[in-house]
Image 1 (cartoon, rainbow, N blue to C red):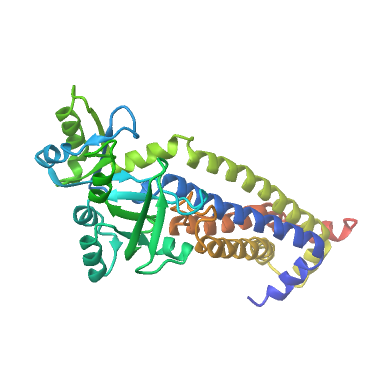
Image 2 (image 1 turned 180 degrees about the vertical axis):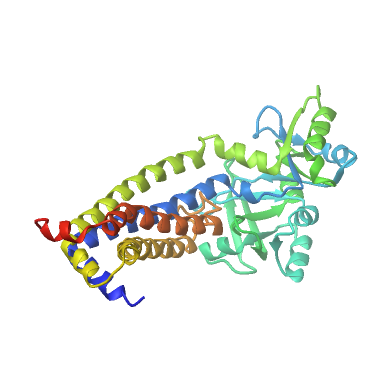
Amino acid sequence: MRFLPLVWSNLKRRKVRTVLTSLSIFVAFVLFGLLMAIRSAFSYGAEVAGADRLMMFHKVSFSQPLPLAHQAEIAATPGVAAVTHATWFGGVFRDPKNRFVQLAVEGESFLDMHPDYLLPPEQRRDWLADRTGCIVGRDLAKRFGWKLGDRVPLRRPDGSAWTFTIDAIYDSRREGTSPNQMFIHYSHLNERQGRNRDHVGWYLVRVADPARAVELAEALDARFANSAYETKTATERAFLQAWAHQIGDIGQIMIAILGSVLFTILLVAGNTMAQSFRERTSELAVLKTLGFSDGRILGLVLLESLLLAVGSGALALALTWLIVQLGDPTGGLLPSFFLTTHDFAVGGALVLALGLVAGALPAWQAARLQIVDALRRPQ
């Protein structure tokens, strides 16, 4: 630590070059953080999906409904611990831009299926007793300034107008499941709709033994094979990943972009350190004359590279974390916008790696520097 003033003075030698290199590293790691958050958003929480839950859709298309009568048959299948259902509502709040997820669900069983949704017991009781009530996520309530007791008007694509009372506001205990959805009672939706009455969007099934989830999924699909409503059942994670892959492998796209950016920044930082070494060859020789060992010289050059990379990278990751805390920048199109602890740790490791790799060659050359040759070399 006593050599930090010396390292700092070396960085200030060419202020413009140091600032531009720092800004390049800063921008690269802000981009890293935001792209990782977007990758997590498009996976829609697949990485944290319930290992004991299956999702059942119509075999032809996700948009095709399934009959409500399927629920009893599913519940009677050996290996099924619980079953509930959900249906897309598709309402718009005041302006078409104000879109967010609204699901019509079977209240009691749906909440039991998702223990990660946290709400006070009294609010839960109020919602279960109110057919025209709804539950909204904490983030969604903050977005529109809603509070308990507010009346929320929605208009569906068919032109029908609906109004719901906010009976409960829920939070989430799991990373990746942002509290920004609305849940209404399926019974209320079912009694008012003329088309697709007594049909649901999809079923959620909790399996008694997660190790046999795939086997149970096959058994459920076989139960409805050759019927008018054949099904496609898979683990919750598999369905969420399939949804993300409909528009491409977002994870691979993000990794490819980041790989290109970080490789370019490595070249920029490496060039900066190489120039810095060439400009200080005689000074490093003088330090060796004064008794600095090869190892200490190597450490000084590496410390300079690390200080440049870590300082810029740490600020970038901190800014990215603050940006992500503000929530989804698209206003609901990326409901799972978050930066995982793993991605944050990977970013820190990449910052360290960048500093070490960029300074490795100049540090090695400085350590092998011969005093006589260095003093004779023209500057």
